[in-house]
Image 1: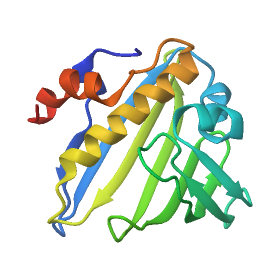
Image 2 (image 1 turned 90 degrees about the vertical axis):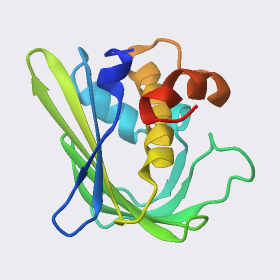
Image 3 (image 1 turned 180 degrees about the vertical axis):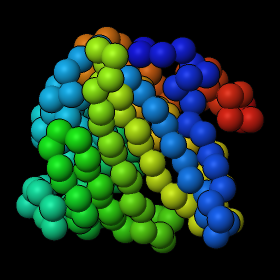
Length: 170
């Protein structure tokens, strides 16, 4: 993995309006273009999270399917709110099981010979962010495997046993 377990953990801060902001920061010694490719190219995207079928670029719409989830893999409508290769990608989709709209901001920057990713999602004030944080932690560890070429986090049960205590679970 790119950093130790504690460093890879998501952090939650409270915004002035009460909403909760979840942020993960990850880094790799790989060029920014390579990390961007892992976030956006269909074959690499499928290896860590799922599939996006639709128009690419700012304003593009399509269907997003998280293929690494258990159960039926149904697609959800997704919109690309911002796309500024290889620095910024903002996507939004209606998460139908939870009944809320999800917006994820992905920002990349190069600094000190590394490419840094900031992953941000904002949740309502009353959301239980812990489960979402652990889920995104698992997906970002899978992204790490795609970028770095190493092993992924494995199955959910083993991951939960390792990471759950960091988030007050398990």
